Length: 253
Image 1 (cartoon, rainbow, N blue to C red):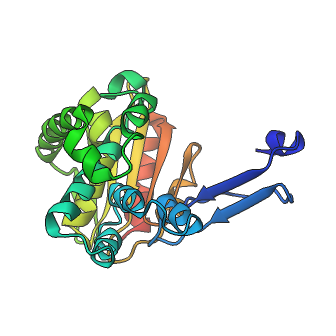
Image 2 (image 1 turned 45 degrees about the horizontal axis):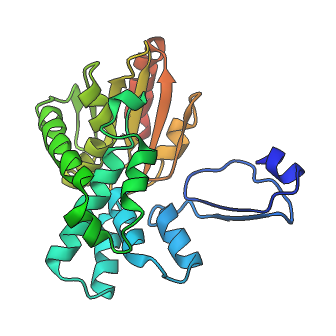
Image 3 (image 1 turned 180 degrees about the vertical axis):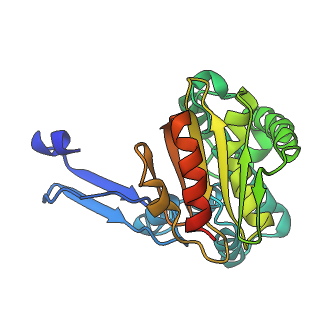
C-alpha cells in the first residue's frame, strides 16, 4: 500500500480485521471496523448505500455473521426460502476460499468470481450457476468427514480438534470452525490442520456468546491475524503446537 500511495494512487480500503498501523495520506480512505458484529461486505454495502445489499448479506452469512445476516434478510423482506439460499451460497463461496494451495480448492477463486459476477441477484446465482452445485456436493462430503472427528480436549468453555493431512481437511477447516461456533456458542474452538507443507494452519473461533479475543490470541504468533470473533495462524511449526494448545486453554478458559 505504501508503494501505491508513493506513486500517486488513490486507494479506498475496507477491512474488518486488525490492520496494524494505517498509513496517513490524503490518497488513502481507510474504512476499518474490527467490531465482531460486522464484516467487510457490510462495510462496503454501507459505503455503496445498499446498491448490492443481497450480495452483502450473502457474504455476511459466509463470514459466520448468521444472526446479523438474518436480521438483514428480515429488513429486506425476504422469505425463508430466499434467506436459506443466501445463507447456503455465502457459506459455499467461503468454503471455496480455504486451502493451502489452489489445487486444494474446487475452483480457482478468480474463476468462481467470473462465473458469479454476471448475476445481479445472488438468488439467481444459487439457482443457475453449475459451480454452486459442485461446491454443495463437495461441502457436504467434507463436512461429513469433519463431523466424524473427536475433540482432543473439550471443556465447557473451549474445544480443540486436530484434522488429518488431507485436502478435504484443508478445505473444511474454516467453515467447520464456523459450524462449531454456531452449534456450541458457549465454547471457543481451536482447529489444528496440517497444511501439506510440513507446518500447520490454525483456525480460532471465540465463543459466540463472547465474541472477543481471537485476533489478539492469533497475533501472538508469526503469520497470525484476523478479527475479534474469528482468526487464524498460517505456517505454524509443529514445535509450537504444545505451547499453542496450552496458551489457548488459558486464554479461553
